[in-house]
Image 1 (spheres, rainbow, N blue to C red):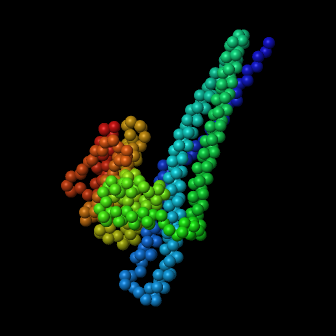
Image 2: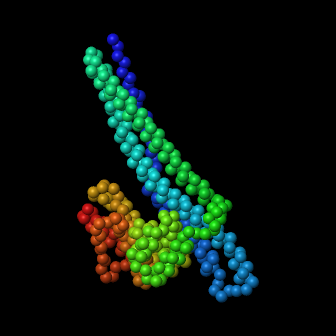
Length: 367
């Protein structure tokens, strides 16, 4: 009597993963800075480009001539902001997809081994008893079900990857031309959702709102309004107590990037003033300190992953140019305990690297 035992097919291959969530986040940071710069241009055109006290027909003609450039700057700002928001979502998706890809790879290894073991046991069962044959058939059925389920999981992974890519590409498409940026801006009524929120926050700060009040107001905003404020008005978010540390970090990194870009251009063309030179020194020190906290020595001793850093305070012009900078090692929004390192007299913004390194040592020892 011949007994047939159907061996399930090999599990499907898992497509290679090539995404870089950190790279996407870094790219998004640049887009956010560009969005903020366009917003500044739009605000300058409408508010500061006309000389104070200028009136009459020429002034009115000038105002009319600046309407379209101001609108275009604001439209470009919002189009780029949507790209930045899409990069945030895309980076999150890539992180989850990479974890899924890793899990699928491990699962496939197990299934391949189980199948090989089954094949070996079937080949060795020359004079198997009916009970042994039944056991082999049951193993084959269970393995077949698992391999089919694995195939469905791989298909879902591929679909999720395709969807994430398509959503990111759609965001790029929406900002691929000035005409599309204008159309999207007009569809929203030509209103930036950040402006009303910015006016509210400005009023709260002027009235001396407490950090608790500011935090309550922030939590009442939609995610879109929060991201719009970070991109369009980082100078309002940057060092405001009550704003979550993660949001302050994004705003301060935007301001840092703007300072570095503008001041380095002025340094290159020889127009950098002595006061601006001091600001540039402080900005470059902050940039270097943050870069050093992403190196191979900045690893969390518990998780084995890179430590999280936050540019919590960034004011390179404070104290007559000495500067005021604070970098957090770890996540201030979720920390159970916070240790603060206070530099001594004579310290200025240019020494932030040394103190950031010491903060990392305290963090690592505490962990």
